[in-house]
Image 1 (cartoon, chains in turn green, red):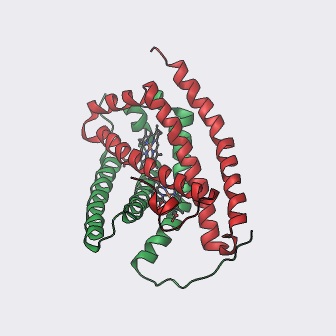
Image 2: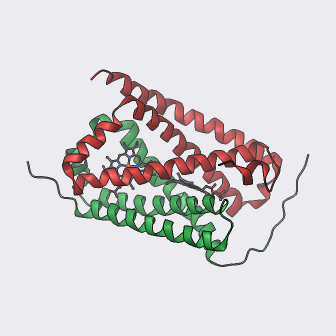
Image 3: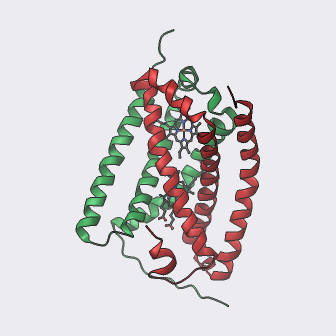
Length: 126
Length: 133
Ligand code: HEM
Ligand code: HEM
């Protein structure tokens, strides 16, 4: 069986931006998340992770900025993805608007909490 | 909740490409669920340092260990399949034919397994080493 592909014009707007966002952020997270998981979960492993491990990693600026980029891009990608999935099951205008607001608020809370953690953390004394 | 949209609702198409899409969806949802928990438990290291130890202790239990192995599978599959979709969508849309899609899905699964198996062995042996204390 053969198929033919067909190009269609998509209206430019907020949803088109969200669609592109999933793709551009995906390329970036591919690098950031894989390296993070390779180091933390496979090479180091949870048995060696504790407060002083995190203190050592967040000693300089590099891993703080890295973790922030990972937080921002992976979380925004994942929340927008969740929005897309749920919108497939919610069909009313009002329902989708409510969904957007709930997810936006949840997104903001987690990003703020995560960002404070990354940049305000100082190693405990002793 | 059923995958109405994907497998029986608006489009009746149950090829490999559809399975790739369903798995992409499930792994994406799994990882975002983990990530919410992960950011909050990491937040303990700053907000409630004494709790961080307990949080990590949870991750060390064998059940969580298995969960982490599945999480790594999800990240590998979702990432590779995501790159495949991105390449088709943004660079070479002519590849969106059933035949090419089918072949590329099989390759995605093969590469996923090849990358995941060694990771699963390393992680599994960490779990075994720490069984019983
Ligand atoms: C590893 C690199 C990643 C790449 C290359 C990637 C790529 C993509 C792409 C291209 C889509 C759109 C699929 C479509 O429209 O059919 C997508 C959807 C999604 N992604 Fe990712 N992603 C990555 C990581 C992540 C992470 C870390 C999370 C969770 C935090 C995540 C959660 C999701 C979710 C929930 C969706 C929506 C699924 C759907 O609409 O069916 N992704 N991803
Ligand atoms: C189970 C496997 C994983 C382990 C053991 C792990 C471990 C850690 C540790 C120890 C930290 C503390 C900071 C540091 O050392 O850099 C951290 C932070 C972080 N991880 Fe993971 N990680 C895992 C999986 C993931 C995945 C799959 C993602 C993303 C998709 C992710 C995203 C993040 C983010 C965004 C932060 C910063 C959190 C914050 O804002 O406070 N991690 N991780």
